[in-house]
Length: 301
Image (cartoon, rainbow, N blue to C red; front, side, top):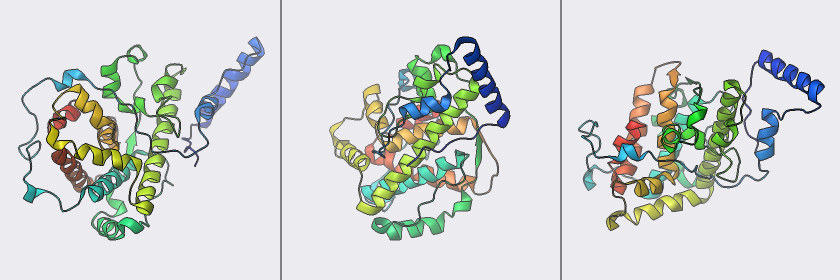
């Protein structure tokens, strides 16, 4: 599987080429191009869908009056739970996150999940209720990151895309490791987009694995969290949040928040209903784990 390449303009390529030639002529040294950097870190094996090592902003965990609507952040009764077991809930939530996140991609050839033997009926029903054209494309441009804050964990927590791996089979190196040496914001944007496309491809690979085998390593991690619900493990603190962010579902929630902050919808049809459904699934995960307090944290990022 190859990392999706994000195209850059002809003028930018020409400028980079010219700069490289001038530098080579003057010093005999050819600067490492962004493509060289990405290739140097790329692994040849597909590997697992490695969850990024996210950061936590402890300041957002300080007790404060809830900003959540009355319908959000309150504990659900059993009769209000969605009619899915944990495995089906994990699959549907990850699928919905994948379909939503890929609307931020510039690559129009990112695949949809069509065949799913282990969850066939579930996928058919989901696809009927949420057709592809409900997920409208968005214009997402990574910000010009403040390089003076790239070692600040609070800053990194607010920009989880900086923690995305640029390697297929490892959580390191990450976007922030590369952009520290980037020459300008155009290079930053290319690095972030490339890592994001890789994240999408790994998420799709996990969905395919779930469809073929009915489970994945990340699902087992999620299932292990559910065994801890009644043991007072998930109190409102940094340790609990770090544990949650080591799962695909919660890592993606943080990433989605950051994507939404820096994007504009190219069209609005279907957006409200899609967001509502995606939030319903994520809220179900949050309710089952008893971590309703995480809602305010993610809103504060």
